[in-house]
Length: 270
Ligand SMILES: NC(=O)c1ccc[n+]([C@@H]2O[C@H](COP(=O)([O-])OP(=O)(O)OC[C@H]3O[C@@H](n4cnc5c(N)ncnc54)[C@H](O)[C@@H]3O)[C@@H](O)[C@H]2O)c1
Image (cartoon, rainbow, N blue to C red; front, top):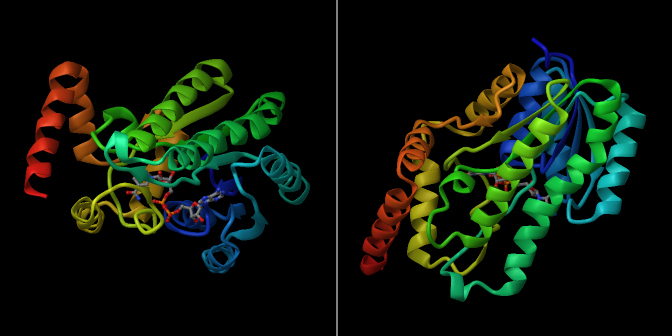
């Protein structure tokens, strides 16, 4: 297993998928830098990582700030040595009808979901290239492939992360490998921290979809790391995501029109 015993940096590792990625790597004896703005959550993840057999380090890092991501890279190399795996995972959700979403919420979403990933890649990839090896997992979403209605800011950032990852896959491979992860819904704290103009009914539907998913954070983390290790470019871990992405590629216009109709039907019931 190429990733066993790896040194890894994970942003947004205080909860949800980031924590699950940390635990999955810890079970293989990894040394993990847990980076987040939530230090209480980061300490809890560190404790779990140690119990799972890994080594844990914590860093406070707001991925919106280049200086903090650059400092994270320096500190990670000082404490862990050369970094084998980078997971650009920190992310937030912003949704609602296009005209109703405040511009400041667009900016918040773009700063974290897109600039955070750009900064992460910029801070860690040069050393991986120099060393001639490394793995980067950029966490996007199936939303970045499918672009459903009323999720404009989220879709835009996640589509851009898909675009950046495809670019870097071609630019840095095969020595340094870049994958992009595109899951559909699973239960984490993301809906509780969401901003924008999602109506009550929409928020309720989202929570229900997250809870009902048969594939949850530990399964997504496992699939993500297996895909990364295999050298997959797009990792789409859920069946519904794979089916919808396949349909979209067959007929993009028809697919977007179908999604629009489903959405309008849902809206008329709100
Ligand atoms: N949960 C889902 O249904 C789902 C689906 C597809 C993709 N994703 C993606 O998975 C990733 C992880 O999200 P999650 O679902 O685990 O949600 P989460 O809210 O549980 O975790 C997100 C983490 O990011 C951290 N974070 C937020 N802003 C930050 C910042 N500025 N700097 C550093 N850390 C910051 C939070 O403190 C939190 O620990 C995100 O990129 C999200 O878009 C989630």
